[in-house]
Length: 101
Image (cartoon, rainbow, N blue to C red; front, side):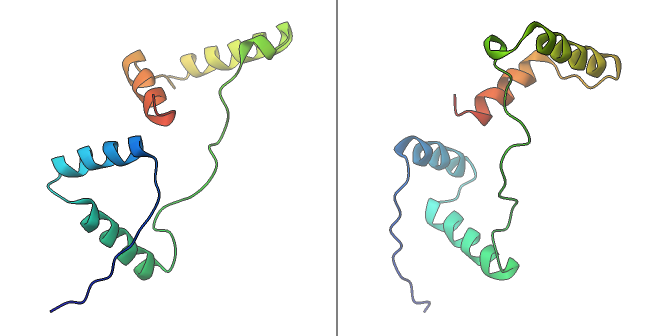
């Protein structure tokens, strides 16, 4: 029989609820997910995914000068011309996910 030990961690209640809801849909208890994560840490000899700061911050338009606003608009127009766009529904979904909204 496998020996077990307890692990106590402090996490945000909302984060716990969100994770439990997703894991429940996968048919997996949180303890199994944590066990999988820790096994991957051992196997990978580190965190099994990239841990880094986001590439850029959202632009706060009120803090920009007219020239900076025009520059941002030009970037957006260039992306549009090059086909680097996403549907609005996907953009809002990504924003909600990224900022926990």
